[in-house]
Length: 186
Picture 1 (tube, one colour):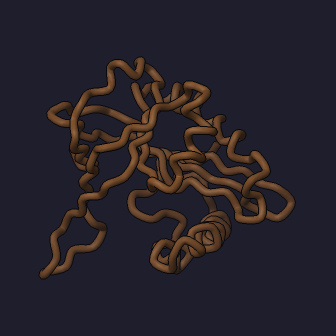
Picture 2 (cartoon, helix red, strand yellow):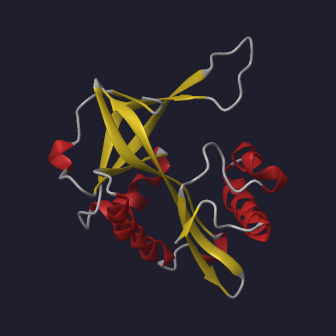
């Protein structure tokens, strides 16, 4: 794993290409944030776990400590994102190696890992994490975020109906607060 400030220009360029190729097939809009050699979509990750093979970046996941608000409770989490596996490696089990993130999150001292995922990935994440007891998938929760760009005629926030992935790191899942809205900018 690497800290967010340990990447060189060549690393950002390689990661940007990786994300465009990984996210592009899910829609051109999903690849757009990575134009211009950007290796992040919104907030820059505090740390990254990057898997390499002979062809370059094979897999990636990033984390950023932040406070979110779950219902009425402010909560420190390590938000996980920028998850991807190079398309030619999908289905080969490389995602299992990304579990290396657990000891890294433990070193950060956060009570929970947190991420949002599309409903289409529910079965994949259930096989990878939930069945092994590494995470819990929560549905029926809206997640509110501030958009990276502000436009005069549009709301500065968006509300998404996504699945919430919670990884108990320093506390048991029973201590995750209840609530139907999570505010990323808590």
